[in-house]
Length: 95
Image (cartoon, rainbow, N blue to C red):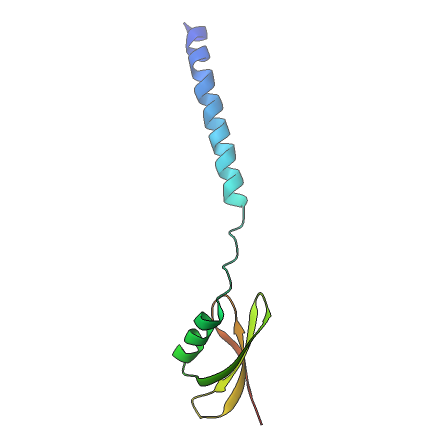
């Protein structure tokens, strides 16, 4: 009786071990980085943050845009914007 019970449980136990190992492997895989926004999405995000008169948008890398626009004081600024989130990382006033 013990032997017949063991032989019936062995496949279920093996499946459980395999499923647990697979789940652990997926849990350790890092999530892919969010994709970069396109030009229009970045401009929309910058305008929503109060900037206006966007003149130049340049993609510096897969993580960074450089944008020339006017700030809320109506001064020309150069913005460095995160390409994935649209967050303004740095603002430099143009002279």
